[in-house]
Image 1 (cartoon, rainbow, N blue to C red):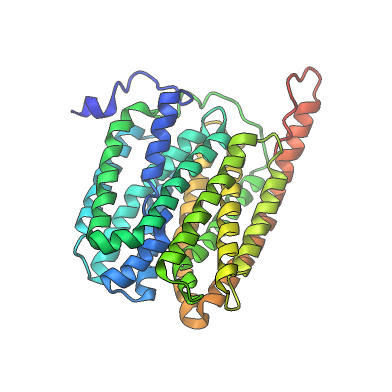
Image 2 (cartoon, one colour):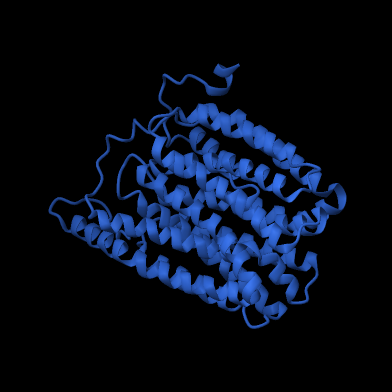
Length: 404
């Protein structure tokens, strides 16, 4: 049975093969399958389960803290464990946590179960992103993950109001459990470790730029988590009904697909510096549009711009980490910072909500977007200088890579 699930672990799997890439992307979609529809899930916790808005925010935060916990754990042990065995354990935990969440209305018990579901998600997210980080074309492959995650998310947000009406929260949780279970069929097709790629050399950057890059990803994703947790409820505050808000979020998800697809098409041919600068600034501007009693049209513009630019930036943010080492270790740390930020964000938002309402929540995120850009810039500039110097070396062949 285990051989059927794990395949031949003694034979290395080429991470760049089509079979492996398809399997990695599929498992990468399962990982955040609840988080990516979090606005709809939070709405279901409030209206179907009967939790308060603050309680629902804390439940969302608990799940993402679970994600962060596993990604942090993997940043320490990823080189010491079998990736396939670890993924099997994550899938089993995800199935159990979602099934046990059914019919559960107690706040504390549900928080524990969603934390457990997050532990599963963190393993799937961290390892699949690490696998893409050691591939030959990380920016493109990160973009592919985000394209398919957002496609799933867009469809999910569109149908969630109808799903709650037809099958309730229990039916939605049963779908999440079944989706996790299907992942078992793909685990045998992914690498069992990153050792085969670790022999590749990587540029030598100052350790400070690496640490600042990781800090920037943490700050940026705290801001994302702050905005994302209450986005559905912010839409309802504009006077739109539930389906209208779901429609806006669905359209924004598909625009996010376009943002991620930018990196699939262009990779680093336009560099990373300007795509990141413009997208991070634009994400902050889109979030600012949600403040001051936004009207329905402003909400549409804000969420569409937010999702487009957020998902344009993420492949480049993660791709920039692959320059620091060839084993994927820095990418593992980056994913842990990403998930930790997404966990902290809803918690911070829930705290701020009680003091200043949705405007205070979103203005806090705007400030953090600006801080993330300032912290990230030194690393981007250092990488750009390196790539320009490399392309100017005698004997360089091929089309010059503009780098970050």
